[in-house]
Length: 277
Ligand SMILES: N[C@H](CCC[C@H](N)C(=O)O)C(=O)O
Image (cartoon, rainbow, N blue to C red):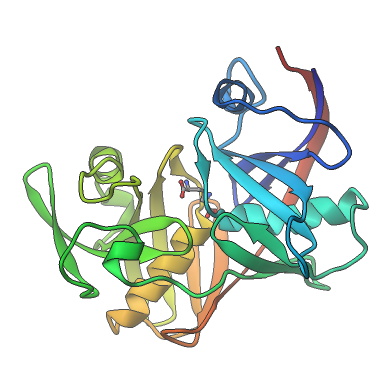
């Protein structure tokens, strides 16, 4: 099966983007892993698939697969690339679209300055809905990570996040703690592990060990989750500039029950074709 794709990234979090409207696509976990493989395939953190909408008042359906082949609920950097892709591929002339995902509808908008703003929806803060096994919904909870007690905030942006505060992201135990948190038994759907350094009330540095992909250069939903956790912990005030290893995002959140708005770049690197077994 010959497959056309675009290679894109949002702050170095990179994607293979596939138009499944004008081409027939049959994806299996094995095929996703092949496409994501940086030696034997194209290489990406996530695979993004554009499908026709399945519900009214929505323009497209957006499916997201991690490099490990698993399908997930949401991808923030991918949402910015999604709207640039459907615009560049002339699948729509709209600059703001409504997109259905496994975790609800999001609304990315191409700004005049070339950046993209996405309404990422309302964060979920109840432990059971993250999901995080706990009898508390407290903003800070202790997690036993390999014998170390780590204070985390559990937040869902449609996908699960466990955010901790560190003194210095560059010295943070991302490689050692990341996998232990990702696979922690109290996160039954696994989890993205965020490591946030607070620079001031409107600025943080962030590294994320992503579920199903490992550490990425940036994580859009991770930036949203970190700002929500920081505001709830009264360490941050909206708007917040999030410095990731791949560049900067701006996050706006007006508080509990309100949507999170994320603004950042989306880049098309090249288009290609590949033969799938
Ligand atoms: N690894 C994430 C999906 C990709 C999220 C990230 N790339 C973003 O920009 O939000 C998960 O398993 O929930």
